[in-house]
Image 1 (cartoon, one colour):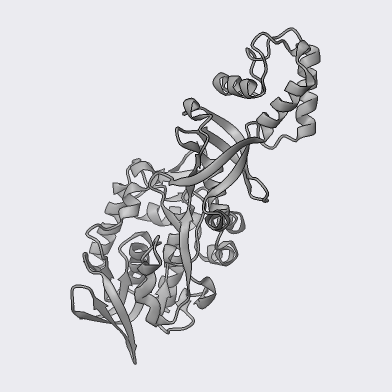
Image 2 (tube, rainbow, N blue to C red; image 1 turned 30 degrees about the vertical axis):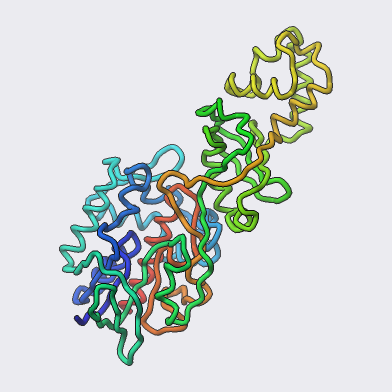
Length: 406
C-alpha cells in the first residue's frame, strides 16, 4: 500500500493533523493507523465525557504560560494557531463551543461524541483511510519515503509520516522509534492528586475552599486556586496544577514529600496576625470555634481550631497567644505528609517524550529524519488541566500539516 502521508495514532492530534493536511492539499492520499480498537479514546473521556476542547485564552504568550514543559516553543507556535483558531475551525464545521466560569471550553452539547462525530465525518468526506488494531513495530527510512512494518504483518509505504501516538507511561511505548535516531525523554506522570499518609482530614472529604495556596515544602513550587479535601488526601485545581509544574521533582522524590496548604490563599503571615488581632479587639466576646473567619467552611474551621488546641468555650478576648500562633500555622502552613499519588480522573498525561530540540518548530519536522513529523503529546510538551493539552495537540498538528503540505 502506497500513501502520501501515514498518521500513526488515531487520537486528537492524529485526526486533526490528517484532516488539516487534506484540507490544505485535497489530493493527498492519507492513512491513519491506530494500534487499539478505539479511535479518539481520550477525546471521548476528557472532561467527564464532555471533552474540554480548549481554554478561553486568546493571547499566545498568556496561553503558553500554562505549559510546564513547552512554554517557550509554544509561544511561537501559538502565533500560527491558538485557541481562537480552534474555536473558529470547530465553528466552521458546525460545532459551537461554550466557555465556563473557569475558562474551560466545551461543545454546547456537553457531549464529547459531538467532537468525535465531527472528526469522523470530516475524515469520511476527505476520504482519509482509517485502520484500527494496526500497531507499528518499526519504521525504515528509504530513498523516497518510508516502509512501516505492522504487528499484524504487512508493509505500508508512504512518502511522509506524522507520529501522533500520544503520551505513554512506559518508555517501551517509544521503542519502535529507536531506529529513527530520536532522543526520548523518560515519560513520567503529570496531573495527579496527593495521597495523605496521616489522613487527619479525610473525614472532611468533599470540603473545599475556593482560593487556597498549595506549596511543596523546601521548594519554590506553589499554586493558588480551589483546594478540595478527598478521602485519600488533596485534590482540586491548585493541587492538579502543582503536580504538573513539579512533576519531575516529585518523581525524583518518589512522591514522598510535605505539602503546606494555606486555606486562605496568598495572605501573608503579618497581614493574618493583624486580622486576628482586630478580631480579638472588636469581637472579643465571640466564641472562636462558632464563628469561622475568612468564609471557611465550618467543618474545616472546627478542625483547624481543634489542631490549634482551642477549647470549645474560649472567646476571642481570652484566647492565649500560643493558640493564636498555632492557628496562624494551620491557616497558612497546614502540613500534609504526602506519600503517593492518584491519577486525576481520566486526565492521564505524561511529561516526557520526543525531545523538542530535535524538532524544527516551524514545521514540526524531525531535524534528524526528513519527512518525519510529530504532533501532540508524543512530544515533550504538556500543560495544566483545563483544555491546554488538547490545544497543544491542535496547534502542533496544524503546524505539522502545514509542514507536510508545503
